[in-house]
Amino acid sequence: MVNVLLMVTAELENLTGLQPQEGCDDPNFPYYFKMKCTNCGEVSQKETCVMLSETVPLPNGRGTTNLVQKCKFCSREGTVTMVPGRGRPLMLEMGQSGKYAPLMVFDCRGLEPVDFSFGQGWKAESTTGTTFEDIDLSEGEFADYCDVGQVPVIVTGLRVKPGGYEDWKYVRRYVWRYGRYIY
Ligand SMILES: [Zn+2]
Image (cartoon, rainbow, N blue to C red):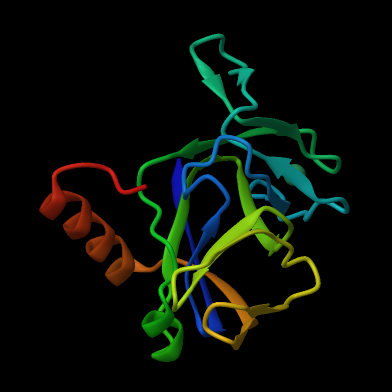
């Protein structure tokens, strides 16, 4: 079992709080990945979508998971189970200083999610408080105009990485300090 922490960053202009439409634990926010088989190293040709609201029974019959996928090369079956409650929005100042925000934790057995793709269904707030919904990041960027602040609002330079030891420590401390899961 490997827990993969998906971290995201971007350059935000006059925008803050970039996150899935209904918050980091949005039940219908799709995460698109290619899956690498940890048994033989084969990476799936097609992207796989996982989302919190879509569950399937675990192969052993005990509980549910968000994905069961068989490797086309070695036929080994793997699972990916999403672990909500650890995500945080990407704030303007984090993007400016090159910091990453934790988005979602994936409990992976036999599979490793690689090549995360940005899609639709994001939201963010302009620095003057206007909410922009249904932001489409599938082209790797977003640009609009905030009428209230009379400024352009822009997302560029989207990047992802798996969280490292320091990130996990930070996520744990954050959760502990506030005594509840962050949405
Ligand atoms: Zn395989």
